[in-house]
Length: 125
Image (tube, rainbow, N blue to C red):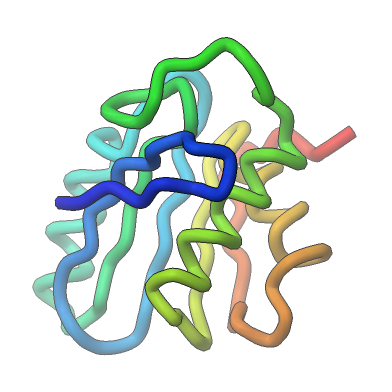
């Protein structure tokens, strides 16, 4: 469990566990990475590397009151993916996290995303 300081100074908490094909979980509002714990355990036992992060203003990430947009969330995810040098990532997003995944894949993935799984996603506006 670690944190990444983003370009704007926001600290993003993330969990990075296991080895193998990469899954990245994007939580819904107002949840945190902890809400994926059962899925993390399931996929770790099946040989995946699993990453789950707390979006800005959520969980153990910086608690700020600015830049809470799908665009910013996707940009933050892109910084984390780049920092961890992830490739062929399967992004899984629930609710607002689904909107984050849609925006990330369409704008920031740069060939790093393999698949997107959307669960009751809130589409970006």
